[in-house]
View 1 (spheres, rainbow, N blue to C red):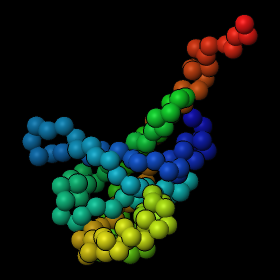
View 2: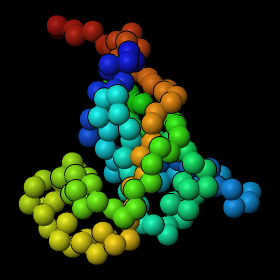
View 3: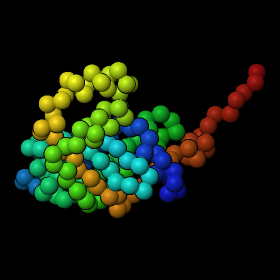
Length: 152
């Protein structure tokens, strides 16, 4: 993908899969789905519980990866990796609301925010500046295998 295409794709609505090194022994990296925010040219924003395993590993690693994909043909994905640039603690209620409103319809977002208001005391935000990008857009590849329309 070209730079503008990959940035737009990452900014689109997807559930991300966050990966972070797990240095607690002979373990594979922690890989978990997350809600995230991104604006072209900016930073990835994710939130999690202050004392969660994810937060502990993010603090220790000081960097993470995020992969997003389109599961509909033609398949596409963007994977980014980079350093954590900031940990915002305590969580700003506006960040909590921004994520809810990004992923949920307005009415559901309001109900979700009411039901999770207690999280404002326990959650923190991690910001990451994408340093390395890996992308694929299989549209051209899929076109090579397209079955032509047949008029009988």
